Image 1 (tube, helix red, strand yellow):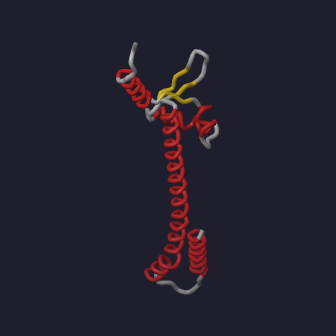
Image 2 (tube, rainbow, N blue to C red; image 1 turned 60 degrees about the horizontal axis):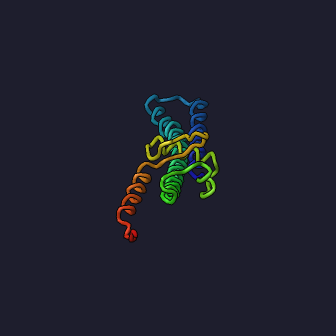
Image 3 (spheres, rainbow, N blue to C red; image 1 turned 45 degrees about the vertical axis):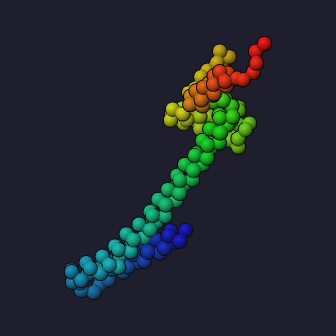
Amino acid sequence: MKKTVGGGILIFFGFFMLAGFLLSTKPSHLLADSILLLLFAVAPIASGVCLIRSHYLTKKKNERETRMRTLAEREKEVMKLATQRNGLLTIPDIVSETSMNSDEADDLMRELVLKRYADMKITDQGAVIYEFLELTRDFKQRSSRDFLTDDREIS
């Protein structure tokens, strides 16, 4: 906010000085007038524009960083849930177990599919299941290891 106010004041000052320069009736010296015009009109206007632009670019950058942080937190949340569910998730699972609504969950899962963290499968009934390949592979390996190392006695 301070940058926009400061930029606005500089722009106003620059235009005020430009108007005074254009309306002056004194005899002019080209070099001196050019330097004064540059220093007291063009420089404040350019500085004001740069300040205002800087404010909006910083705001845009902060919004992008916030969005990326939120996306990363949601990805962690979904990955944790996928680990608990042996690598298989549906949108209703995500909605019921996280703070996301169905649109946010759908967008996130599409992003994870694009990043190749998950694969989208459609069942015969038409349900969409997201399979986290690394997690399902790990689960299958653990299951087979547990089956092979079962110490129960067989009678």
